[in-house]
Image (cartoon, rainbow, N blue to C red; front, top):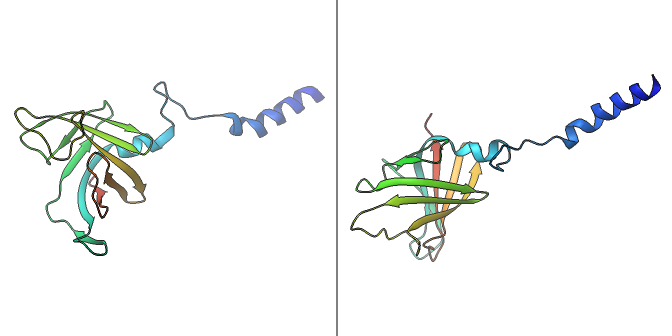
Length: 143
């Protein structure tokens, strides 16, 4: 009886510490799922050669991330969206644009960002094309 009680106590105390929230794809918990849904570009952190500052963006890009790795965006209407990859703090957007090269894409034809999640949304900082003074784009949840 003593062993049973000891085993139960150990299980109750150590169980939460040893448990993990891991799915079959190797994604850890809700962090990777926090990008899912509809988002709108609301502000940009820019510089015109001097100190950086935030400016509001009117009629900003709308983007929706789906759980199957696809997305829709109003940013490049002449292109089709060909999927996204969220890996830790890196976000890659794949576009398929016939007879057109996007200025923001890297050598592989992918637009990449560093992503930083905030309480009310996330910030994207380009990594495929680097802003000399630095720049970021703020997105807020629409749904």
